[in-house]
Structures are given as C-alpha cells and as structure tokens.
Image (cartoon, rainbow, N blue to C red; front, side):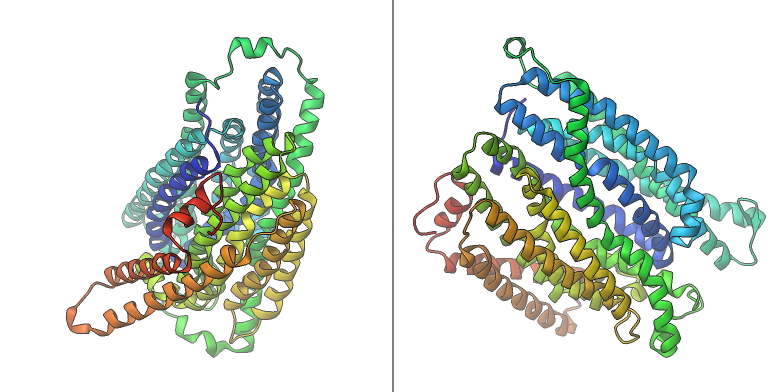
Length: 570
C-alpha cells in the first residue's frame, strides 16, 4: 500500500471528486428532468430524513478511523491498528443494521408526520439499506486514508457513482415505462384507477423516485463489495516483522469506547450540518403557503394545468433543492477533500508535536481552498441563469423559481467551501466541540431567518438562500479564526483571500460580458450551452492571468502552494 503526502493525496481525491461530480450531474440532470419539481420534492424529502440518520451512524467513521490509524502508525502500534479496524467493523456494522431496520419500520410514520408526504415512505424504505453498505465502506476507507493511501476511497467513490448513474436512471426510466404501459392497458397503477394520464403521471412520481433511490442503494453495495475485496487482495503493507515488534493491543471494550467517543463529536457536527436541509424541508412548504395566502397573485406565473395551487409549495421546494442546492453543493464537496487529505499528516504532526509541519499543511490547505472556492462561487452567482439553462434546459418553470436563489447561494458557496475542511481540522486538533457550537449557532440563525424571510411574498424561496448565506458567513469566519488560533497560525490575508477575490471578480465580469456579447449576436445562431461553456472558459483564463500578474512569477505561486519550502517572495 503506497502512502501519499498532502498534495498527492489531495490531487487523487480532487480527481475523484471531479469524476464523481460529472457522473453525479449526468445522473441528477436527467432524473430532475424526469421527475420535475414535484417528483424531486419526494426525492429530496426522503434524503432530508435519511441524511441526519446517515450523519449520526456513518459520518464520523472515516475521519475517526483515519485519525486513529495515523496515530497508531506514527507510534508504531501496528497490531493495535489492525485490532482497532476489526473492532470498528464489528461495532459499526451492528449499529448501522439497527439504524436501517428502524428506518424501514418507521418509514410510514416518518413520511406522514415528519415529511408530510405519505408517498415518501417508498423512497425511505429503498434508501435505508445503504446505511449498512456505507458504514462498512467508511471503516475501510478511513483505515486506508489513515495510512495516507487515498486510492481505495477514490476508486470506490467512482464505482459507486457510476453504478448509481447506471442503476438509478435505469430503474427510474424502466419503472416509468412499466407504469405507462400498465396504465395504457388497465387504466390503473398498482391497483388504483385514475381518470386521466395527467393524474396517473403525478401518482407515479413517488414510485419512480423510490426506484432511482433503490438503484443508488445497490450501487453502494457494489462499491462496498469492491473495497472489501480490494483491501483483502492488496493488503495494508504491514509485515509480520512489524507486527512482531508490537504485540500489545488495547482491550476491545476500551477500543470500542474510544471509537464511539471519537465518532460522536463528528457525528454531531455532521448532523448539525444537515440542519440546513432539514430546516428547509420543515419550513419551506408551510412558509410558502403563508406567503401564498398573503399574496396569491405573486405566484400566478408558476401555475398551469399541470401545476395547481395545492402542488405549488412542494414544487417550489423540489425545484430549489433539485436545481439550486444541487449546484450549491458541488464546490464544498471538492474542498472537503482537502480536509480529508490533510487529516492523516496533521494527526501524525500532532502525535509528534511537530508544530512547524502542522502550520505548513494548514497554510497550503487554506490557499488551495480559497483559490478554488472564491472564483467558483462568484461564477455561480454571476452566471446563475446560464448555468441552470445549461444543466436543466427544458425545465423553464423550475429555472424561473431558482435563478435568484442560486445567485445568492453562489456567494454562500465561497464561505461554506472554505469552512468545510476546517471542521476536519478542528476535530483532528482535538477541539470538535468548537465546530459543534459554531454549526449549531449557524443553524439557529438559518432557522429564524427562514421563518422570517420565506413568509414574505416578494422574497419567498429566496429567503432560504439568504438565510444560508448569512449562516455560512458566520460559520466560515468563526471556523477559520478557531483553526488559526489553535495552530498559532497567522496566514497572509492578501495571499489567502484578497488576491484570489480580485482575480475572481475579474473572472466573473469577463465571463458575464462574454456571455452577453455572444448572446446578443443573434444572427450567429450559437447554441446557448456552447456560449455558457465558452464564457466560463474565457473567465477562467482571465482568472489565472490575474493570478499571474498579482504574483512575481507562476513558479513562486506553484512553489508557495506545492513545495515543502515556501519561497521568500510568493
């Protein structure tokens, strides 16, 4: 098993994220076009319930395993390292199986009393088994990451996403055609008769959403099988001689307790991070209903023969989560990989009390994160409508709902993307409670702003985006400040934030001007997707050109970010 440093590990995970995000979009875009805003409401509601359960059971496992594995390796406790892995497999498999069973048994209750959509129970039942597969994968992934080997994580993620694309869409479209054929022959869907095809199509959406989720669960099972077989074949590079030098292992009970104690704070952080989705699920629909009562005519442009007043709140929520939030989540997922890849080396530095190495890794992480997050967020904010039309063309009503919220979320992306890896660092530095307090405070801010803003007819769903922006600014400032204070780190603000921001502004302005110019040249009959891609390409070129001008030489930029010895004049 080959060990990788921070930069190489980051590069592997970054490549994985780019591949999985492309595959994820190839999955999500056709699925959104198939389900529409209403169907995506069922899909998103199921995941809004599933995500907190997943966060409690699974989210803390990879980083905990990575941290404990890295510490044991640094202290040359190889037998204890393997013992910890075996204990984690046994402990977390039992917990995940219990959680999946409870979720299946309570799916009807959850769909009726939490989601408020009884038909969501099918999706909840289909997603529950994936908790078990993801738990097993997380133990193996965390173990490999602790040994600074990111390849098993990367490959298994790609496999999972690829099969999610194939099986998820395959099941969804297959069931859609089956239901359509069933209705044409019998006028019924699963034993229930419907007056016309429009009612039948609407009634089919919960089943189609559940079929797509079932495909995702099977994809997780396939990826789980791969990583277990791969780990068995390739091993972990721990030799018999290394094991013979360390024959002492901690008691199983003490190891299990340590695993739970380490996982619990991370799980709490992850649960609180899911509050944004839970808060939106619980507040958007009732608050939109209130706004509609206050000013019904504000929403008249969205109504049609296929979309009645009763369906509108779920449609708006599904459009917002299916389109705007999907794009919003892309960049933070990428920057989260820097927190994942820095964790093993940071844990080793802490175990060896190497403060200089720790500060060096943190500085690299902040710079790389800012250089990616700031232009990406501004690009989403400035080009929200073209990006939505590029990804979800044909869903005009959904796009109409999401243009303004996505512009606001684009700015929020910057702060969330920078804050996300900081949470892994706080946990590694032994202060997970700080992340919990910060996230909880941010969630409370979002909850109150959601209730206040979404109820205003003129703001409506944009209120969810505004509340997200405010809470993410708060979270980002406090999390970066906490990391820098704990590591006694004083990063150069101009290098980390100011220069990337200036370059990102120039990038965004260039992209917008390019898009508007090409759009106005109507006689060229240029495809709007090509115009969007070309504009993004021109803007990206301007971004890197500005970075070149702001620093003395490109070599100094590369050295400052990637070398072990920082240059004197970056």
